[in-house]
Length: 130
Image (cartoon, rainbow, N blue to C red; front, side, top):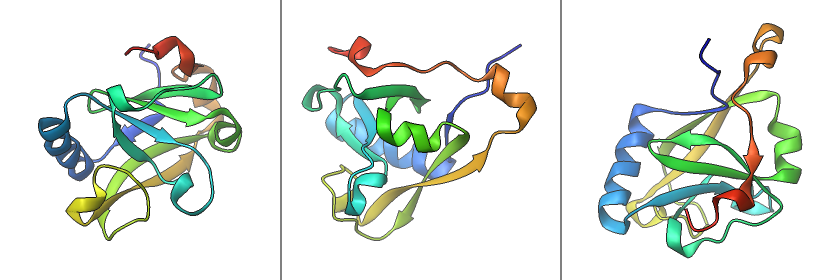
């Protein structure tokens, strides 16, 4: 039985990711849970972002690893995330901001019967050099 993904991506967000990848190379997403836009998913060039021991790999979207701060993951672990894009400028350093767009999270709670079949998370530091 195929594992249930913890993070998904909409077609609109995937199109933006492909555009950003063409301009910046391999990408990764990180959701820190900090103040302001820190709880929004942010997109960075993979070689310019160092994943730390307090980060958790929660899945992959459009070929990009998606990490979340472990403290933030405690709040989100019972939900499936769907990464979308919307017009508007956030106040972060995420790569889509100059395009006049920003990535957003939509979520739903996992059903009880899904919980035992979730894609496992991994320590973020296992992905260093990714």
